[in-house]
Length: 359
Image: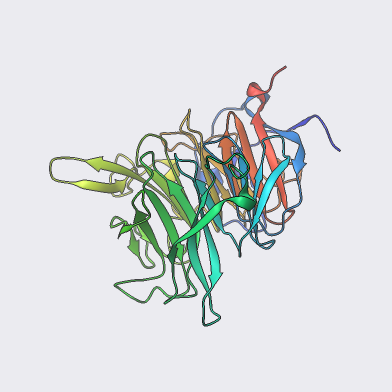
């Protein structure tokens, strides 16, 4: 077992992403002054191994760690020390989140009566008056709250819950030809799992617009508000990360881009630099500082932005992790610790800013 911590050396943005491919020249981002080591990320040991093609990781409202262990067909509950508390079999879980009632919502799959495998959303009831079943995944009641039987190729790679238990489900699939019901959409549900509407601010289809979506891969929301960040494959679009904020005015209620390249005052915001990513698969938010983390599986990198959309120098990748991070597929953040789920190695890696590490 490895113990201790390793300092990740600070480099300029152009060199931090030792990736298999690079679509965007990060040297065009603002060059910050040389940064002292107290703003670098430190890996915490040991990593948490034992996952098979896992696609999502979550720190729940109950402060426990959950993993959608996709190829192993299970969801896993762990404490933050990495000890497995319980597991539950589920066909190909892709995404996981938790509402304020401590129910889990999972984007997974089911086998229909005709034998087709279809995407579905499941609700896992962790709270129970029976101490023998409360917070035991293997004993919890599971309800299927949404299923895509008419479109079996659709999947739900991202879920996020707002403060009022309404939630969003990012849906993806191979067919976006329909104007009325394309596969690539973000669906809004109420707190009782009733479908309300696709998010109207997002436009399904290829293009260079800030709200064009085609193949969503993940989603995360901010606490106390209904702002959220959607990530997607760069296939056919210029912006693979979209930051939407919820507005209420006398004549409008809904989502609008927080940063819009059509606004001359916002064109220089780092977050909306076009063609920055190849395949973002993980997104997380620091609920205290409002920093945003985005993991690109192809670039082997974690991008960090502050609440104003400015690129943060402590972003890191394969080389700055000493080769530990190979294919980041999921992210979670809690109490100064960034959890990185590596889809290739099957490990959860943990990082903390060295200024936050007790000395």
